Image 1: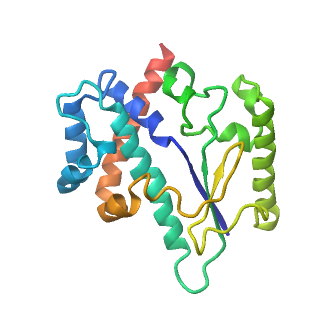
Image 2: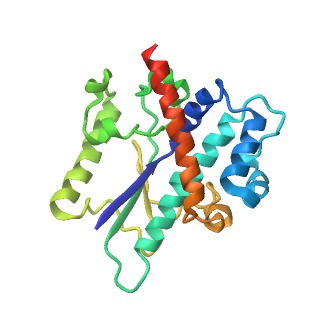
Length: 231
């Protein structure tokens, strides 16, 4: 049994850090070079999607970079992994979520201001461990209730390998738990939004060279962020 999940806006943190590495923002020229290096002949196909299209003369393509990282590295890759894990006649139980709760506080603070209104990488951690105060914040009443609910899911799974009856299995309908104050359990809710089956599944997540280059870019950006936070 396994739990898989992502946050709604995973790419925002990493795109912002990459922007720091490139002088503050990811320009249109930088974005075109990035796509070409990462995806080769698929670059033009990716740019044809409005969500990832940014003019080569644009001053700032950080938003489009965020969408790209979010959908390719997190949302759709996670969905594909869930599909592969539940393929076959007797798949192991799998529970899939996306955390969609916009918090009343930003765990990344001034480093990534955009995360104040988004659900960025790591935003679920204060809820899973009920540690808002350790991050220097206080949950609102609804957030505390959500944290208690999330904690019960995780502790139940740890003890019984089942998160609870309100969280259905991913298989057979690609069912997700969208985790927020008013959680829902729709079937395959992210496919169309993130262009999973129409784009990223065809680009291929198993392309190790693409993933290696992207991870290297993220690591370089993270080093820059560490230097900035020490100033």
